[in-house]
Image: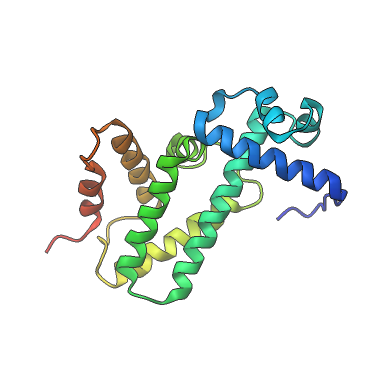
Length: 188
């Protein structure tokens, strides 16, 4: 976290920022980064100036939306870690959750595919939290013998990007991603 504290927003500014983020998340999920900021402002019920006060560019807004989604995924991974269930199924269930959410959310999919991780800097350590939690799920699954020992969390992120590309490009019902996840399992 930054050592410089940002001033607290007024209640109306917080509400407007939240409305902009919600509208942007829906717009980016449906259309990716091609949606104009004016359209996001219209969907949020605010003026374009309000959007620019909170986010100086569409890239900054996109980053904020994706960072929020990545933080939610990190929280889900930490919840999986806290469950203390069987580590193999926990890892593969979380992999499936991330893949499903990214498949349904074009912005998240774009961010996860960009250079096998976030295509932008995560100043708040959100990506580090996600990577650490996903890495811990991976390590536990490897210790349990459910995932190959020669896989690292960076490999899983790259494989996830490949999984998303395969799911997008395959014919309905083909589920080529399952072949990829089967490749994560140790060979007997």
